[in-house]
Image (tube, rainbow, N blue to C red):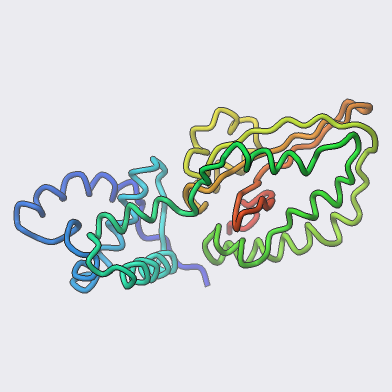
Length: 246
């Protein structure tokens, strides 16, 4: 059942900047107090503040519903349990790290392009190797969006890919790399299918993101594979993620 969105997080980003000094003057622990104390005192308000703070950090206004807030609150409790004396502010800032961008970013990028190396790779086999697992989809997108995409990708990487007839012959490959945190400001965003602008606020933050454009040289035609993300030390392809929206 669809839940009604309740708050635009851009508003909370602005509210945070105004309320934080007042709270500090009153000696309130929020948000500098320990995460265990802040969450014990008022977990829901703290979760709302944290959501707005993260939205303010990446400059993307998000609308949340009760399901999203429940999941985020549970994650805050889980992370805090591992280090209960960590300040709530530090705990929230850790959330922005998402799945860390690897230090060996050039090698990570190269590992994607290597899959397309060769004069005439079996593109169906190459694309099939990027199929995301249900767990990987859930680690990238919230519910119920993730469940919808899991069904979509089962079809996309199954019967539909098996029926594809890709041109043979040499190919040329171009690509672009960024992170899901910076995708909204990436110079190539306007060149990608427009639906990506609809899901900027749904991605897990700070995950390596890429697109690959394949040109079939003899036909002078090509295709764009957009939506690669780097998870579990491998690239997976989450095409057209906006199909998971309502």
